[in-house]
Image 1 (cartoon, rainbow, N blue to C red):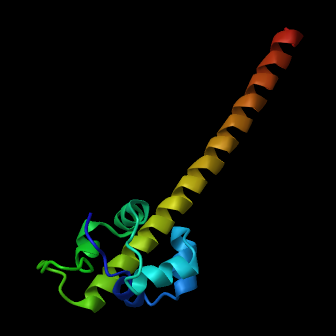
Image 2 (spheres, helix red, strand yellow; image 1 turned 180 degrees about the vertical axis):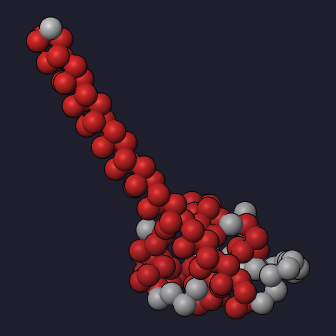
Length: 123
């Protein structure tokens, strides 16, 4: 597992420690220890960062290796990470809408079934 410069990542996102902690479910003291190199990043947090931002974006913050790719500018990296976050939020909203529509669909089917049962009793 690579060592990620979490402080640089967080600052490029223009996030406070509290915002970062809330996003990844970690405590502020633990984040501070990671940022000050007193504790290593856990595998869970590493995987969550990869999942949230993608390998390409995270590569910019891996320590001890010189990663060269098309995203060499911190501003561009931040822009891409923020774009990924927005897309994930849009996806979550889409899933909520799908759930709402499925619920409406179930209610309509139930009403249709009740109507058919009434018609069958009348006939």
